[in-house]
Image 1 (cartoon, one colour):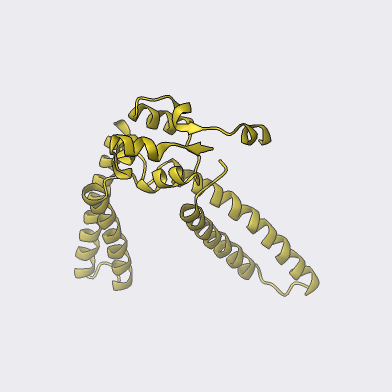
Image 2 (tube, one colour):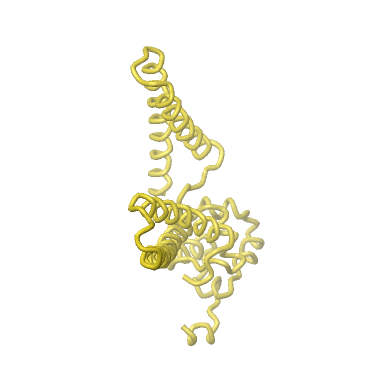
Amino acid sequence: MKTKLKEFRARLNITQEDLANKVGVRRETILFIEKGKYNPSLKLAKKIANVFNEKIDDIFIFDKKELEAE
Amino acid sequence: MKTKKNNKQKYRLMIAFGAFFAAVASFCSFHNLISDAVASGIITAATCLFTIGIVRLYIRKEPLIDEMVKTANQKAISGAWVLTLILTTVLFWINLIFKDKLSVMLVLSIILYFMLFSVLILRYYYLKHGIEKT
């Protein structure tokens, strides 16, 4: 799964810490999501999408091959 | 929002319990009601609780446990369980080959400490390197 979280954050000028506080997680969790080292739950993905007023699909991009492989 | 409020309450409770237990242990130690070793243990634990509460409530205003920490904990526990199962099998064969050379206390201690440390190590690993597949 790829993420555009960093781009959206930069666009709205939100720090990782601000975003973490808004969605109720640790800053490190946001860092790992941006690096692609942690796949957030649907609930967290929705919360993040709500912060940016976007759909989950616009922020988190699922690779077709990855989906088929699992 | 509700989670944030719950966390704040939790940290306030941690501070209150930390201060209370430290005060009680100091009082009991001062009046020789408990031994110094027990008192120092309680005071150390209470001070840790108090400090964590203060840091989380006023300095690092973010949750101590979030979904990533929970996932890391779950994965660490299941990983440690599998490793302990392998260790138990190894110990079983050692005991079988060397004809009951291992005492029950020794085996229990090995298993207990191995599981404890492997959980901590795996948890640290997952929190440091991330959990790619969830």
